[in-house]
Image (cartoon, rainbow, N blue to C red; front, side, top):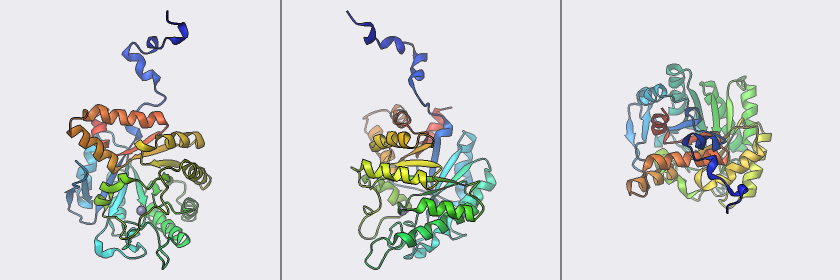
Length: 328
Ligand SMILES: [Zn+2]
């Protein structure tokens, strides 16, 4: 005899009941599409390690983004891929007015005024050493100089029309510096700050570094990105970034860090939480589907469901083009 308080099936026996079990349901508005914008303005170059993804030149951006906007795309995140020869120790090219990010921001805001354009803010794509900040002569991070430079770059993206700036560098105190920079520039009312609060030193970034040509030339990023076992540092970083003026909190990568997403929801219950399903997660799901482990569509949708269930409101994912179709 089954006890009354053991009965669960009655709550989801009918298909119409099953979505009712969700706290959050995936919608197109939850999706943010990351785009690699290359300095080669006419180029549309497939990225070998990321199936179906391309580096996009500014002159090809409209043909890539237009059909997605028509299907309901509401936000993008831009990453710049500059020419090698512009790289220096300080990341001078990060806010070059003729560089890919500022050019792409201007173009997208003029062609698609309703599209939210977020710009990733970091120096590693633009530094000759490939690190995310400025370095002391002994190659350790000069946090103060890095933060000053990152705030400058973020403000220049904002002035070019970015609706959101998202610093991925993991320097200490950069949220406050960027927020102050936006206030001083008179744009803080129209530019939001998405904090890569809990960005872990992950094995899953390989395809991205290939796509953005942004690998470190020596050492690694373990002194500023979070150690994967560290829940405590992630919680401290989330709380700090809320205090420093973040409008949204991000966890990266996504799938291996769902406990941290749940922590973010708990620590910042009044902030939207974003999860970045990174290049390695994207490639893994693709390759597993191609190898017959599972069907692509249900696996991708389940990965999204997991992230929403963990607590996030925004998913930054390379599967956005497929999801816009599947959600139609
Ligand atoms: Zn970086």
